[in-house]
Image (cartoon, rainbow, N blue to C red):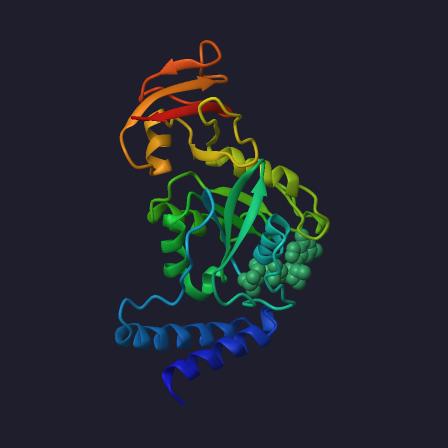
Length: 270
Ligand SMILES: Nc1nc2c(ncn2[C@@H]2O[C@H](COP(=O)(O)OP(=O)(O)OP(=O)(O)O)[C@@H](O)[C@H]2O)c(=O)[nH]1
Ligand SMILES: [Mg+2]
């Protein structure tokens, strides 16, 4: 049996085995063996990366946490996708992307394998995301360790910590239940707020603004940022703005003008 096959066999065994006090020791041995084998593979494989995912949407949120916390169940609730949910730990074996469509914004959500399986790799994905959501099953179980790991890789925002399975009585924090749906609406709203996004609607000169598809930028973005995101040819001409950032509807503004949520903008090409 090759090293890759041995890794697969151990991962399969971990996925099949119920995790409880009685199997804790066996799991520990399997994990150590897995770590040893992965080190060997890492030495042979260029770059050593096991997971890959293409960035998509207007912003990216990553769900991380211990095995069996309910990451995939929450991911499915947020995105309407169907990541496999297991009645044993270590069900998710790779990073799975989905889209949460919220207030017209396309937020990419990533489901991940349990941190116990590939902490280093998952945390390196976390460092590239716009927001990390730590999913806990019981309050504070391994939370300090997870927070420490997330801070070590210098994530963009303070992570959002949620406690799943509120239907079985967990409490003491931001509680949700992927099973009953309790708190999921609030979770979507919290994710959206933490991302601090601004929706801008583009209006062609003399035409109507396209209200279906906003252009999404980070809070504090300017007309120049929108122009750059549009990647148009030529030089930027004048810009006109309607909405909260404008002193009056259709105000002519410069490239450094800071936009507000739901502004309508016309940018002319020189
Ligand atoms: N009671 C209850 N059970 C839940 C809830 N969310 C998930 N579960 C159950 O918890 C178990 C693990 O759920 P998953 O979503 O697979 O957990 P995970 O964190 O993705 O697990 P891994 O992929 O193995 O790391 C499954 O049996 C789910 O049905 C919840 O809110 N309440
Ligand atoms: Mg999972």
